[in-house]
Length: 287
Ligand SMILES: Nc1ncnc2c1ncn2[C@@H]1O[C@H](COP(=O)(O)OP(=O)(O)O)[C@@H](O)[C@H]1O
Ligand SMILES: [Mg+2]
Image (cartoon, rainbow, N blue to C red; front, side):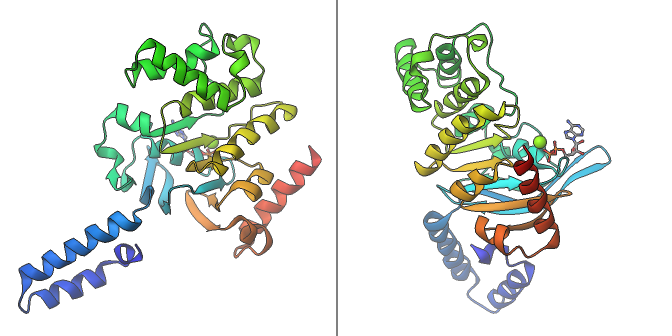
């Protein structure tokens, strides 16, 4: 993989070498190698030099990282650092001006909306269930509309997902009858119902009363342990320590530091990372 990122110098060298003779066969060999390597070790998500502005304001200044299948990436960073914007670029809720995003090798720019929505699920901070539909109907809706499933099959699948988040007994409840934590779990069930390859979470617990945070994090931890690939913006550092394969600190639209959570917690490379994590820990102890 690192070969593809090694810059233009290698490319220039290669073309100089091929110019000396067997150009066609060299090219064939190179592309065959690339195809084989891609099949063996292609990341599920590749974000490459992502750049995004709103008008004059540059929000993302060249973000690059890969996620493999089953990876759980936790993203932290100050308010306004671009965390939500980055997630929104991944499932194309907003457009970007530079760079590229690939899902299993396929550019998200080239995918149709339905395919992308099915393959990349998202759970937001604000729990946006339809108030006039029951928990079950909220989960069934996407299965019917996006996946075109029949009524009974959709119902069965939706029940399975509600069961997965511990809410089978609340299937016929309306959002107003559910707690914030239960609503957020319905939101997760709704995303899971699409059989997504990747799940995005944008501060899924930050709007919840403290006593309801745990039940949502528990569902997320189960998903992580079950092998779901996840990109999670959260400042719940207990979750990061226990469930994240990697932790990313974003500031002013750049990745300041990224690595295994224990490395960032115990031996961060940058002072800014240490300061930010220190402040997070202090705040969570005060709460
Ligand atoms: N729809 C929008 N229009 C204009 N500016 C926006 C929009 N969404 C976000 N921004 C700006 O982009 C920056 C990053 O925002 P955001 O990605 O929401 O940060 P974070 O999630 O890290 O708090 C902020 O300065 C914010 O004001
Ligand atoms: Mg945000």
